[in-house]
Length: 457
Ligand SMILES: NC(=O)c1ccc[n+]([C@@H]2O[C@H](COP(=O)([O-])OP(=O)(O)OC[C@H]3O[C@@H](n4cnc5c(N)ncnc54)[C@H](O)[C@@H]3O)[C@@H](O)[C@H]2O)c1
Image (cartoon, rainbow, N blue to C red; front, side, top):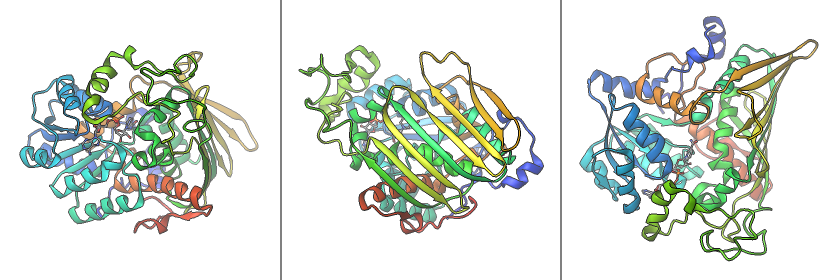
């Protein structure tokens, strides 16, 4: 497999870099560097095609690309199985390019050099593999895919074609998480030994996963994969090692069958008055135009019932993860909290670094995130990191700058993520999902041909 990770190692960094976090965040990976350098050398824009014109595809990877990166990217084609949404997408993005309901037609007629994959999770592998085989480098939304067999197909195709795969882990790019990485690199708490990591999705955001395809394992791989791929990627990145073994518990105890009434979706629901999760999509003009207007093509209900008996994913999850370098992690995710955010504590031989990051709370007046570092036999230090503007704490824009604009800058914190990162993060979720079902711990090495390493490659 072609190398897909930056080469600056932790110790080298300590010797060579004292730069500020922000300054580092414009850097790029060799993965995207290869792609972008080749197109810069051609003095021609990247020929960029996109498959999956849902909200993620048409906003960040559609309109934002068209508006902010038109000097380096030409959008040559859009594809979706829903012809109505596809037509809306073209208009919303504001470009004049051909549209396709058949992916093969798009590849053949537009000959892109880069393919962006923003379809439903369980279909990513199909487009990643076929895109690479047609000569495209890939920019794919997380998760890389949803099970180990599809993951192996992607790994094999990447090894065969040597094309570049960028997995868009935008969470890495937020300033406070980068600061955590910097402090770990500096061994501010000594040698890292364990992490307590607990994520809370609130009754608005958390509930949204149970309204859509995400609530079915066959489409999103459970939230251990769909959502926690972000969290597991952060862990892999912070720990700078790869996972060895996972043991997990999970259950569906709130959504789905856990309610006396249900309907197909919120519009027209006879229980609207009684349901705490009733959501009136008709109040959202954008979602009406993007989804509801085109329901008749594919039956995709954006306001599906959170009490559907078809929901088969866990709504509470806990996992123990052991890493190849000996670090142990206690992870949990709850999907029906009164507030949104996460608590994390990094335990080291010399002290502890912790944070309680609250997101989107009405009472949250602070304009900064706080990290507390406490020495085992000394003082405690409070580090404040100002909030950044933009999606995911400004992470979305910084990620796109790296992908499209500035691929050759150094990447001292290793923000860029390739196919191995994408695989390692989902493999933790796949192992956790399997462990819940079997009651046994699962070795990451048993899932694909990837053999986890003590230090990330
Ligand atoms: N990184 C992030 O923070 C983030 C945030 C949101 C979504 N995402 C990811 O982005 C992707 C899209 O999410 P979304 O919320 O826009 O979903 P969505 O369901 O709104 O859109 C997906 C689109 O893919 C299309 N599609 C499905 N199967 C297809 C197929 N076989 N061929 C062609 N088109 C197909 C659907 O018709 C739909 O238009 C998902 O993988 C999701 O995990 C990432």
